[in-house]
Length: 281
Image: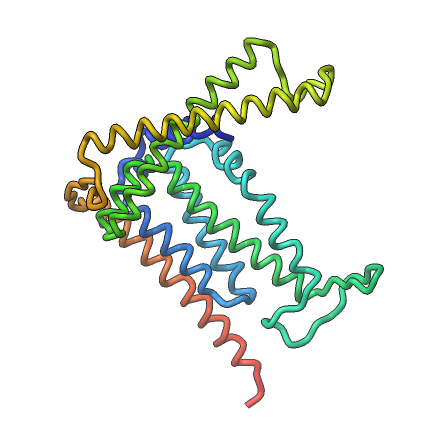
């Protein structure tokens, strides 16, 4: 997983219509899509709204020119968490339904309810669509551009500085990790090789983790000393230049926000107007 950090940045530095847009516009669209979808009440309306939102995502992903395999590779990292979160919902009752119908009866008094399965599917759809927009944002915007865009959107500078330092030395740690693993490979050591004794593998993996910890600690001390020499203090912040939005950014932002705002309103009120026609007076 650590090795994928460098692949992530390589994909974000490609050239396309979506890559060339200002990161502020992409952050706003991503956050707006997530907030709008989360705000839709748990009802069958979520399926229709999610379908339109996912179609918008597919259109933006196609314009980015990134291979679909990149999307599925990153989606698979979070799918287990999503299925684990949504899978447990089928065994419990929630406050969104008043009546429950048993779908499957299991031993030890465990029941799977039809309404709970519907709720779990709605939750899973929301999770997949929201995470897809996060993948789009991270795949088309380098991390440094995202930090600068967050600063231009008036995110507190203390948070920007902390995130910048974390991101910067996350890649340093990844580089150190690669050197250590390459050193182990040159010595023909494989921690998953069953031909080696379990004790021998555990001991060597412990040595590797200890080496990573010590090198990280030494790197942190060197970094802190060099920052003090450059005048770093509690009032030090990252300098972010002003950058106006161009017409392409404004058009992209306006069209996407228009879709994100109008689609949930249309499906929600259209559903209720349809239901009111068949409700008794």
